Length: 332
Image 1 (cartoon, one colour):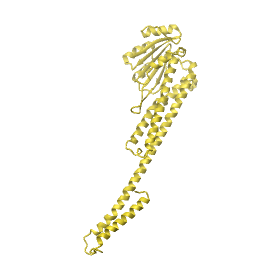
Image 2: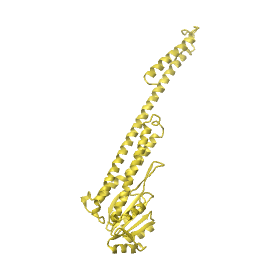
Image 3: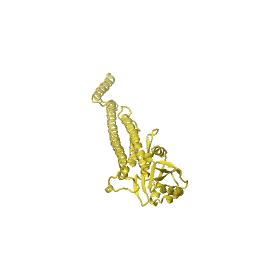
Image 4: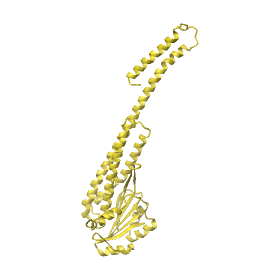
């Protein structure tokens, strides 16, 4: 559905017809105005009217409706299509999820399409309306503000994940927590969160570079004000910091997983040594008792009155000797 629709002239919101086609014609008639339409999870029928009014390309419309796209930037005849993936961090479950945000830029208009509850644009719109000198740069200012908001939230999520990783690291290397049964599963779950985060941040690098005027022969993009390139470079710097953080998180969680597995292997070896030591101690009296339990008439000391206490004493001495030897070697 359409969440908000307004015409902005010289950075200020002005009265405009409720009909989108009439509002677009009014914005283009002003010359220094544009129409901003915000849409949240539209149906095919709802978006068909919008695509007709703004003459959006059918491939871009299909992407906007189906979602599940990678961050990208596509240039069509009458519009510029950008896909962003806002990331949501849920403190209760320490989980990362990503939504989708599409931006259409064209002559005198900008259409934003959101899927999911992440990155609501109401705050972005209100902030821009309070800064008419920024909003006066037209649709490019909207695209920059949306991208800047999404990338800045990436930094917040990266900070939260770094905190979670430090807690996980402390648990792994604690004397009592490193061997808990669900530690490995927690590490794998965290690695999946980092992977989900990387899917949102990594592919966005190329679109931001193009908006900043870097790469692809530094060709200017249609419908984008070239004076905004330094601002997009600033977004690119923030995104580079995020990607570096993601790479660092991925390497650290891999190292923690390797350390945890090595720790578990050492503990299993210790357990096997202890089991072997106790088994060896149990084997000595079992062997002696087995020998004297055989039904033979002619055995040494069989009828000696001190045989029983002597055998028990021998067993005890051997057990003490084995126990001290295993303790000295760290097996027990």
